[in-house]
Length: 639
Image 1 (cartoon, rainbow, N blue to C red):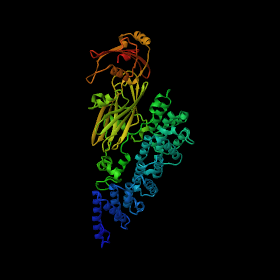
Image 2: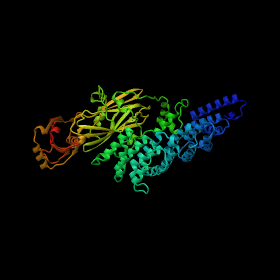
Image 3: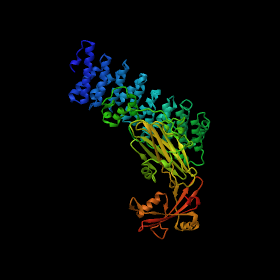
Image 4: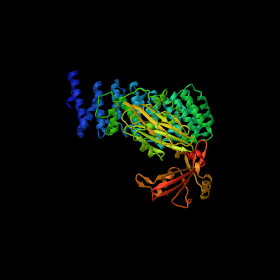
């Protein structure tokens, strides 16, 4: 290494000497040699990055990036911070790119702010070839090393404002995810994004503004300059100039405003009326559906549909996945990752760089009725607020979404969610299907989450619903899942279920996608009659009076079942718990026999409420129970 600093006699000697030298340096870094030798390497590299020769500067920056990936401390590298920042102005773009890699790798909590601020300054004059990569790295560093929540919001919004068209969707979507998952950020983010929206701003900022104000605008509604009407007018002023996707998202924000701020409902209804005549079919349908939803006699469905979005699942940042996709194929396979020691210690991030080069791209294939639903529609990961209804077209035989084609291992998840309102419906090595639901009277809203657990993107993602009881259960879908789901990414589908009458067959869902080959699953959804039952109470006298009035015959249903669960006898408490899980109200001290269970409930449909009476007579000696249920409606008793 000492002899390498001597002036070479000719160009050939120079090239050979540098080749041997940098290979030796990289080997020493890889072997994690003794501390004094590593310090010597750092010092030598500091001189190489100031060399007059472009190749030497390039190799020096690359070796120093490798050093940052292995070093226990970044202090020796940070001594050269000003020189490295200067490399961003180098006349050679490959050196500028290596300088960016090194700044990204040498960043920690002590120098994150000055590095991020310098990168923001260089962003506007940076070469177009590296602008998007610079935006991604600024966004990752800001999130990774933010010690102040307000600083994170300030820098993220400034980045989106400065970067303009060089901001990929993953950047603004990640800001939305972070804000949604951190309550302390929500009011501050809403306040500051509104300030940007009131001025000239890029489409990405309008999308963030639409989402954040739609979800959290009520947190700042009492602040000066942030009243509901001011929030609405700020967003509405952008509708004429933004993209169709952004305009669709703003319509979804406005339906949220109807729920949050009823005082501005008339102004919003006029917007829905205008866009319900839009020449764009998706915009027209969305506006019309929102108009109908906002003008229903009651706000029950509106409140359910516009419920606040749940926190996003915590997983490796999609920005990292995007960054490694961009860098794949630009260099040879390495045993280290650009991004410092912590990135190299993270197995998930390292695997991203190893697998990204194998990422396949697929064209959409026509898969019978599934493809018909996707025609002309492209989902985006910003669809958390979307509400596009797509009614299923005519099914061709065989109907693979029906219960006759249920996938193996569908039952455990179904049984898990038989009474529960949220949980995992299905999971294997490649995909996880989660469910969250809410029921009010005859209406139910179910949100299905589809997570890609694999290290590769999946394409042509579609779902098909099959309703075996269309006369008794009405199904409407809201928003379409993204057709492409990145590695460790997620998409979702919202489905509304309206009870029209009694039904015994649960709907099913078929999930299909391309991951090298066509993959498909058919699952049964835990949408059952007891979801629409509401507990009701009666006195002892009223219960027996009504029981006698109904009498037996067609208005009474009887059944017998065993008192065992997984080979274990059911106790009295177990039986009570099961009855209550079916949403019956157990009436105490009504039956003379204290072991008998007496209950009352109301089954709710779109057009009626049917009273139901229950009498359950367990025989614990014989391990059998007799159940008698009386109904006001003969239709219900026959179900």
